Amino acid sequence: MYSLITIYLAALWLLLASQVNANAWITYPVDGYATLTHYEIPRDFVASCGCAPSSTHYPTAALSQMAYGSSRAYGPACGKCFNLTLLNPVMVDPPFYPNVTKHVVIKITDLCPLSKDGWCSGTKNKPNSAGQYLNFDLAYPSQAIPDDFFPSDEALYGYKDFGVWNISYQTVSCEPNWAGSQEATALGSVATLGPESVCCPANPTGNTSCVSYSDQNGLPPDSIPTTSTGHTSGCKPIRPVLLVPSVLCLLALLAY
Image 1 (tube, rainbow, N blue to C red):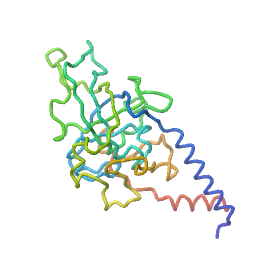
Image 2 (cartoon, rainbow, N blue to C red):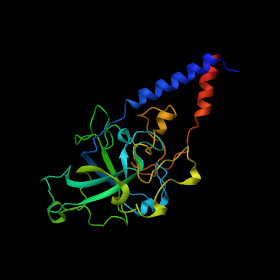
Image 3 (cartoon, rainbow, N blue to C red):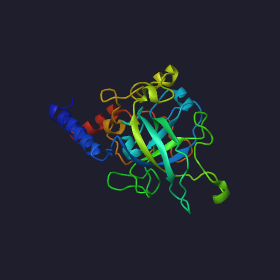
Image 4 (spheres, rainbow, N blue to C red):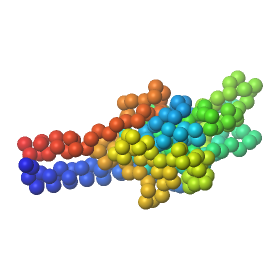
């Protein structure tokens, strides 16, 4: 049996690690500016939050890792809804300013992994190359979003897809703003994966928001997921690294 002192030290270590990790996450305002990219995920795909497969029938997005709040599985951003408004593309010459205003309300269902220089590279102390700390990675093309959602001028630029946009965002209630908010099969988490590995509130509030999976399990906030859908942003559902064995290993080391 482990001594009470050993158990106490192990618990203290986990608590301190959690507090250090929590200080690394980006605390962002409810309304602000960000960049927007897009990536493609299969219909009915279960992404990092573990949201119901039918959520992909409606507008969804991944959020950059340090704003998402976890380096694995679910984080505090899971299930939240944002109204994203297109402003102008980041990398075009001459500059392009659309003559129509396009916006979409999305639900966060996925994690956009941290990278050194990518659009999801923003940290608490360093923005991405467009000067923004947040990046939303829109699931697009998608049957939930019109094909002409992104304005373009192919005659002038020679291509339609500008890739990265400057946007404004507003945090909104999922009900009734998100298109899937009235569809029961699109709400909540995948029950078969177990509550220890998924978290996707239908309409998150302060009392129902997800905690950070990586903080709970002692994982570094800046670690990068090793499994993905084959593109740079989406992640396959990651089964939990059980906390119990990790604690037992630590206890054994301390006891030794």
